[in-house]
Length: 265
Image (cartoon, rainbow, N blue to C red):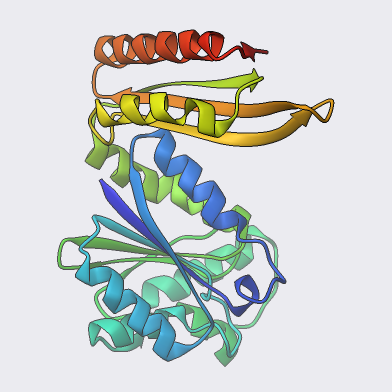
């Protein structure tokens, strides 16, 4: 289940806004066994959005999640960019209009459907709007070949609600059965370079997607003793297999830390 993420928003590239959506989505996808292959970030520019969508579709991910740019303002142009990339028209969708009305009713907002607000109900031809009850703009689902494209809001609460309800089922279905075991070792007295050969040997002796093994430097304890974090994840389709692999690797790591004169805190 290969997934790509396209984040749209000039604020993400100017240092104004932290891309917390990408961080959250990556965690959600990894937790159920999906593989987030790439995250692309582009400005609010029609040509750049369109080009990014076309480039991603060449790689044929199972799912493309797009965040941001669904609102009512002039620089919200994600759906126009998607439509341009796919050679489709943008149309005022009656279902999206009703969803827009419902979102106002639910939030007790007495808004008129001005031209600016109706812009949020204009979606690529052949796509399906997704109700957004936490905000105004509907999400949008469509397909391009075998790739499912889901356009979500940039507002984190709105994006999360629709992703959990409408996108996660696709991910779970595509992944199938999935089990993961994880541990974080906090190690003192061992550097990354000291333990690197052993970890490289472990990684080389297992299937690429079966384990995740990574060291993270954590400075020095009392300014002289090196500290690192060793993160181990074993994953697969069967619990017994995953646990056997996990236990075996964990034992090797613990023995190697001791041999190098370090200790696990």
